[in-house]
Image (cartoon, rainbow, N blue to C red; front, side):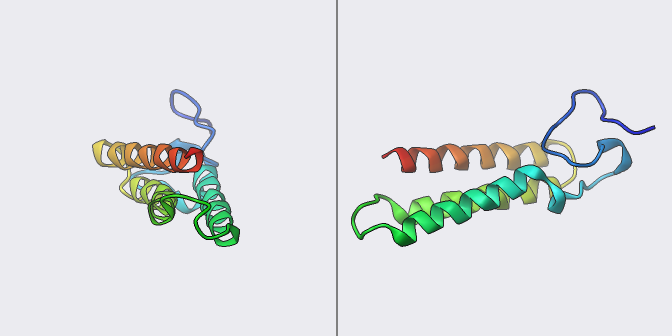
Length: 102
């Protein structure tokens, strides 16, 4: 019997029940979205006139860290370590948004 444990998580393509321990983090919608966001931010930086964007290095670092922390978190399985990595990814996403809004 398939399905999700508890609340359904749209970020996962596979039911959590079928995996014990480490999730198949390379097959997550959220990780794909983080990679697309990184590609788009890097393309924006690359085609922008010099001096037009502020904090370019920090923006590149924060957008790259989103996917890295999501991948690390799901690579750790479940529990506090995973939760902390996902919290860091959320913080990096907020930092990226702030840089883009500046």
